[in-house]
Image (cartoon, rainbow, N blue to C red; front, side, top):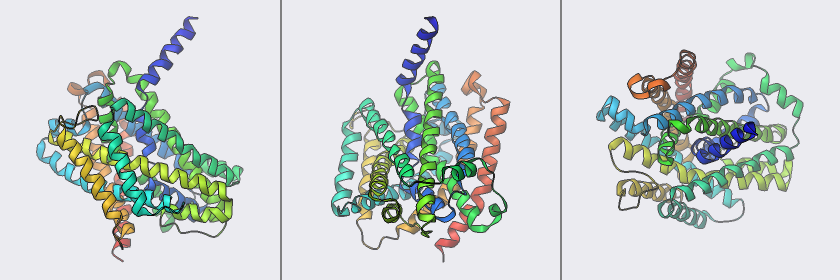
Length: 418
């Protein structure tokens, strides 16, 4: 009985703090992420599935540090950077994050437009309507109600699992390539570039700022830290299982059918229809719409949190518009600008997405360095500083991200300037 009672308490505690980690990890499977995973499956079949294991471990490490700092300090990452490293560094970092995130926000509204065009809905209707829905949900909602909506949206990603099953993949081959290390193909230019892209699209700078701000706003403290840790781990595993099924679905259909080039997320859904049937097509399209609408809510919100915290303005969904005007006006401006630009004809969206991904690759390394310097400050974290083993893993990951970002950015900029 005592054992059951203890587990009941743990389960209740988990559901009390679940949200920030699970939501943040799942938003990573946005329109840009779906393009990347679809392209990986279409171009190389099952051969990039091995990346899912190290990527998941890396994501867990980085997200756990963000959640731990939020729970222990009660402050967002931007706040801590400003307090520990000064306003000037923070100001320029905020400008960079604002610029990078806006490119990603454009990609999300493009995903909304593309996914509903698959159902014959004009972007001139879908984008304004969805922009208003996103704005009202956050500005007029309370933190708990908004979080519940985001959690429901997270679970809709399961449509990609069903799409992967309907694609009738070679399960044995898929499992083998998941655990089999890459061979000589890793040194081929296109394969290496796609490997870097898959890793880079999974760990983005905005995620760390949003997660820590969400943990603080939810009121998670060091007493609930263990349950929050489980929230982070379960979110990271779930989101990469979804990513695995996206790659599998495209490997089993597009790669086998000779479709090796995906420029927009909706291209993958359209190509699936003749190869895997209407149900797979509909599930993929619904998943894309959910992912795009979900991320179009979170990315402007993350940007508003990051910039306002860093510059010392009030922020948070729990506050009224009059209590945090800078926060809500920035959120509003990002939605209006992001949705409005997508309606312009001849917008070079592919170049914008490439620029934002390249800048993500540059920005993640310094963000990780700041995080590791902060989490190892004894006067800030007390007994919750990183252990030696954890530091070895985390600094090793940072070094890998620095090394990988160089060829990633170089190749991206070369493609843009062609």
